[in-house]
Image (cartoon, rainbow, N blue to C red; front, side):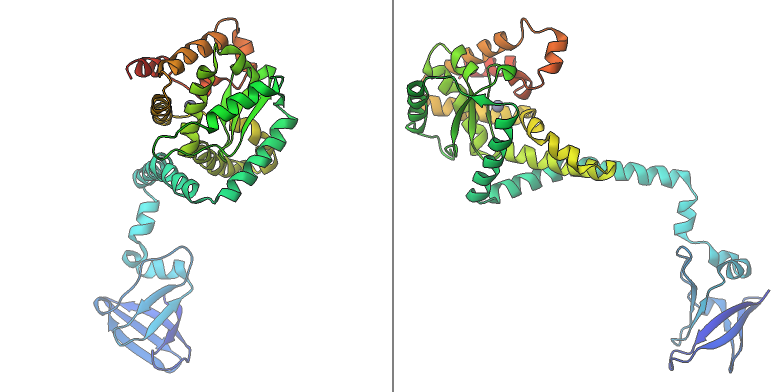
Length: 336
Ligand SMILES: [Zn+2]
C-alpha cells in the first residue's frame, strides 16, 4: 500500500505532496512534480519517536515527512522499530531503568543532598541566620517554649561565662543564648539552624554545677560552629517540599516546621564532631571533659526511667532521640 508523504527537495521551501511505495529494496516517490527512485540503503530513516511524523533523509539533503506512522510502519516494518520502542516493550529494560532511577535517587540522597546542604549552609550570610532564628523563636515561643523560671543572675552568670570562654579553632559563638522553660521537653538544649542555642530550665536544674551546663552548651556550640542544624534543616526541607509537592499540601508542612526542627536527629558523625569540639573547648578552658559524660548520664536517667511507652510517643522531642548513641558517646568522652 502506498503511503502519502510531504517531500522537500532540500533547495527550496516548497512542499511536494507525494506517494511512497516500495519496489524491492528501492523506494519510489511519485507526485507533485517529483519522481525519485532511491535505494533504501542510501536513505537515513531515524527511529520513531512517539507520535511525531517519521522522516526519510536523502543523501542530497532532501527529506520526506510522513504523518501516517502506521502506514509507514506497515510498508517498512524493519524501519519502524527502534531501539527506543524496543526497550519500551521490554520489562527487563523497564526494571533496569527503575533500578537505575532508584540508585541515582539514593546517591543524590546520600551524597548529593548533604553536600549541597553543606555548601548552601556555609554560604548563608549572618543576617539571614539571625532573621531565621527570630522567626523560629517567634513560632516556638507560641507553641512549645515558655518563659524561663531561672533567676536572672543565674542566667547572666552562665551566659557571661560561656561568652567569655576561648573557642577551639573554627569555633563560632552562638548568635543568641536563650533560656526557656518547657515542661513537655524535659531537660534539653538545642541549637537552632541560624546558630542560636536554647537552654531549657530543666537542663540547668539537672546539672550539679555550671560546668555541666557549659559542657552541654559546648556540645551545642559544636553543632553551631559547623551549622549542623542548618544543614539538617536544608536537607529535610528539600525532602519535605518534594513530598508536599507530591501530596499537594504545603501548608501542613509549614505548620509542622517548628516541631520538625526540634525532632532533627543528628547523625552519628555529626554527634561525634560536636563532642570532639566540646571536648577541645572544655579542655582549653580548664574544665574536665568528663563533665559532658556525667551530664549525658544524667540526661539519660532523666529521660528514660519513668516514661512509659505512650508517654514516650507523646513526648516527641527528647534530647536522647535527637542526640543518639549516648552510650558510645560517653565511652568515647571518657577516653579523652
Ligand atoms: Zn548533638
